[in-house]
Amino acid sequence: EALLAAADAEASPLDLVALDRALDGLARLDAQQARIVELRFFGGLSVEETGDALSISPATVKRHWTIAKAWLVRELEGGA
Image 1: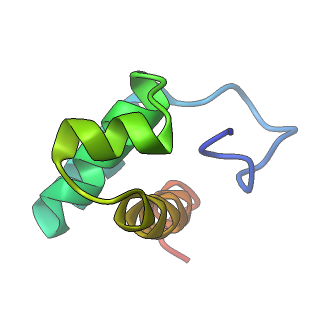
Image 2 (image 1 turned 180 degrees about the vertical axis):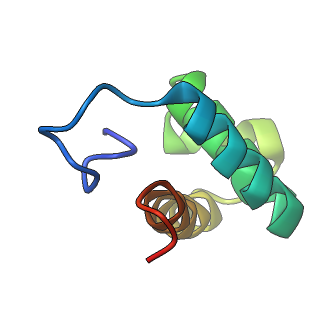
Image 3 (image 1 turned 60 degrees about the vertical axis):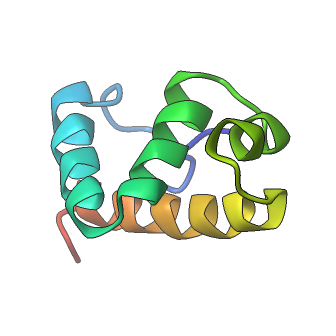
């Protein structure tokens, strides 16, 4: 599952510096969501593995993953 599938697929490759800044911003708002992004996107963990690592349910992982992805895409697109 691509984190930034909604982001401009034809544009330049993912700007990791911008992603890091956005992830820092997310961590200030919700540390658990940021951790979920790190585990899923960078660590490649499944929903179930992420839930186990954080001692939360898969449903909570899915909910936070969806919210975090949307927030990050908005931030990377300029906060529109």
